Image 1 (cartoon, helix red, strand yellow):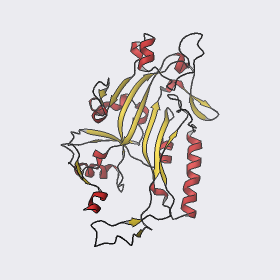
Image 2 (tube, helix red, strand yellow):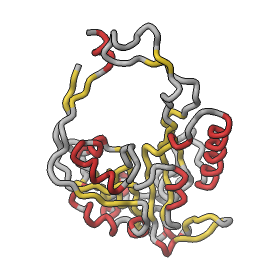
Image 3 (cartoon, one colour):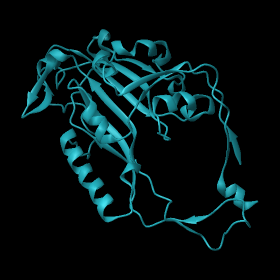
Image 4 (cartoon, helix red, strand yellow):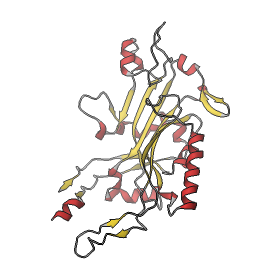
Length: 292
């Protein structure tokens, strides 16, 4: 079975220059809080053995038995943050708690196993940036003032994910310049949400539990006749579906700094501009090759 990806017009992208989860969190400015991240520790193939029943050159592909080195499947971690509460059952972490625990795991794997800690990397990230005037400190950690919710302040949520189109042949040169020595596909800015902070509970005299979002959702804004507080969403075209009330991220990518002023001043983000189309890639699936 084969499949062809569609050619896609691309004029630019904003990428995260780092893939190490600890480095990324430590590089965030005080007004930018992690909401969630996805990470994984790849399986290594360096110590794998050939599968004796299927040895080359009798077959068109090599079949290997996996090594015993530890790995971490893709995992989502949620953080205490000003924008969203964690899903039900999730245990939110502070960035400091997360970094301490991950460093302990990385050191153990490096000392006690054949695992290369460099294989631990980000596969997704969402952050929220708040106005500097609402920043405060709580037991030495960054936090926001309650005034932010009472005054219905605006904040911006940004989402970064891997985009396979950045692996296309005609953009690799740009990526190699931006990320020298890095072979993995970087995280790309795929969505920006402008939202308005809300009090923990809407309405007077209600005993209803506060929702997950600490900002007005579209439904809440409409119900409260606060149409100006409906979230404004920009996302890449491939995520837009018929009927979505979203705008194309490409239209504002050149000025993403106005949405994320503090984050854009760091060395974390690099903007790339491409000309032309991505290459159509034909995919072959191993099980189909073996069955021929």
